[in-house]
Length: 582
Image 1 (cartoon, rainbow, N blue to C red):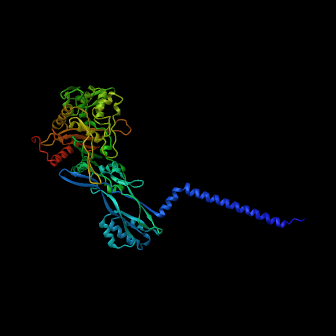
Image 2 (cartoon, rainbow, N blue to C red):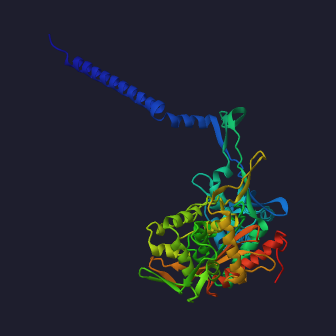
């Protein structure tokens, strides 16, 4: 029988096509299975979020940031330093603006901007949105609205506003931009950012098929928790006076910069903290030198010079090694190893008491005191005075002092440390140490926050914190009396305030070279520290000038600023004279 090859061929083709179809169906099945696996397992979160976005609405709700206040002595009223203010952002829609030159001229006149810069922003074809200026006041908004310019509109924004402009800017810092949200930078804004910003809330609602919110479709929500407001210990009037005084002093004496710190030695409260230069936190973004944001009173380390001498004297007295009437022979110099250390005035004074050592600020005298004290004791006392520790002040950026030169126990290092060279401190650390002498030997924790005001209106007062008893009340009183004599009979006569007794000490310190090899020839730092009125001090003060050019010694510069400040303070506090004016 003859085979029908045509029939066989058709059958084979059919079977092959069937196999191909089955293979295609199997492949399609696995592709679908793979896709389901991707959607359900691998990218489950992505597609879930996508679906939720089509049917749900989620929004973070921002809390109101806590505000920062100061007050003054005679009023319970709080004065704002940092507040939340509703301003506006002006933006343009360039593609709908026809006469761009005319619009840029009109806007630049009202906003006091460069017309060419405004023109560059709005001369962009098909651009739907271009910010012209942020933080515009209501007055300017109204002026621009009256112009009826097509393609110009506003977006309201809650922004941080600093009513005092430069006042206490080195203390408060500013609200800058973080990675995801505004963030406090420097000062109080940075230190207490989390407390000030509060906690974010949220609202989750459902949408209908057209994407509109369903009024009864609220799924869950959490109200934001507003931030805590802060009241500072700073007195508005005294802060203003201190800033004015340090600015005038820097300019008068040709200094590079300067600091004033005023504090209550009994409580550690900072009454004023001023520096030159300041900045305007409303316009922080215009500053090119970021160092201006740092608080030099807590950030900049320096060798304090002779204002260290009262501490050295206190250590000698407290250890029982010397007393105010102890004497030594001043030959005008001291030789230690290969070094020769001389008095700053180059004089030979002969037999001198410890009281005269402070009055004349004799380097040889404080070296004598340090040599009577065990090195380990001397180091321990300086550390207990807080010179190598953070004070814990509530401002970002505090630096720690350095006493590392004393760890090697070299004679020369202890000799120079006795008069404030070879060690470094911050202005706040040294005035806090001096304040312990005004407070019966008790070291207080400096603080610049008076109280917190919670969102519900309740208040939490910050209580003074005693850190430790550094020297005995007897020692503190003896050294205080010696420091009064410095102003009455010694180098600091220009610090004398008629009708009052103040304790004080000058310091003219050399500046180490940047390479660490010796000191600058003609550059110095002038400091005056003091407290009073005695016998019950109300405030202690540090005045510091960096590299003054118009006078050689602190007795001729910072001592004068101290007197001017204390005269203002006794009048402001209405403190009656404690002695006859002479």
